[in-house]
Length: 514
Image (cartoon, helix red, strand yellow):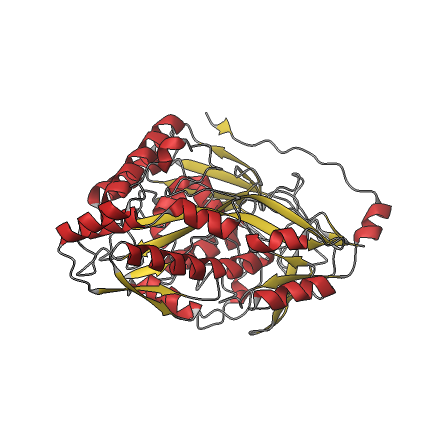
């Protein structure tokens, strides 16, 4: 017997007159850098996620409250043993080339992703992190079946994972040689033009058939009202703000907290904010000859006042949080804030015990992300006050990201984009470094606990596992988490229907302009 997991709720259709008033125009959203790719799952970053998620859809997606809701799937069931998920595709879904979207394309896209060595989330589904998909089948045009090796608490969350791009593309996106050519998805907007370094222009897909479920985050109805969505690349934050104030840009995401008070004085701009999931840490390369000494890493933790850094960077909007569990998570309690206390004298004593002889420690950073750069500057000063000799190595973001992926650094001022479940954030940190150079922490017990958290369906037991991981992290210090950025977006006052949400990705559907 199967348990029905989702029953769709009908939503009232808008009157034709209301739709007529809302349709038309161009919505322009600022990006602080160009996207990296138009191929789902390959060569991604946060800006790439934003555009890819508009062009393509997955079976499921995260709602605004971080639960998992329908996207291409209108419903799904789970077998009693928790190993078989059967999805029913919504009727009328089409690709941008006019072809109907069927289970065949869902399976084709999945098989292609799993064959891609450049897909970082392959390890998420191949058993490396506990979750193993044995098979994806397409028994008929509207039915997709996933078979797992064993029950997994995070399976649906991983399918919805914003960073993984488990989305559906048409095979014509790929050439005869198997190489990616152009994005043919099923989203409410399709690609019109990508001028590298300048803008990405999307146009409304006239044949789009929206979900009948209410819009929420990336889930449910994706009703497109404006004719075009333009993602304009404006790297300089001052120039981006000027573009907002002149109306050249309609939405400015990720506003720096110190600018909020000034922008609130404007009548033509509204500020939206929500608790965030973007985590700002210092990454420590535990395989570095110097930093492999745990006492030295513990000294770094005692030398850095994360609450002072959070206060300075967010105008007091948030406090420090060293944990991979955000305060917006249902798993959070104050035990996740336990961390080596700020104590420069203890840091100096630990340095002496570690035999530190004044060797230079380099912190890699960049100026594309103001938060990363300013965190590195403050951390450098605090570490120096405790007796460390620290230099900043300011790189362009692409180089720093490449170094992160290869593990070629001593310390990095970094940022993890939103993971909508603590297990997903830990998966971004924990893995075998000999196989995954990007991994921060490869303690065998941590790897085992992470796998256990993915198998555990009981929420209380999962929380206990996360608490164990956090306690181990506080002892081993493979990373120094500082705080979670509040999500702050500035929006022109003639823009309606736009909502900031925890995933910190601009959602252009359901939005219209006067």
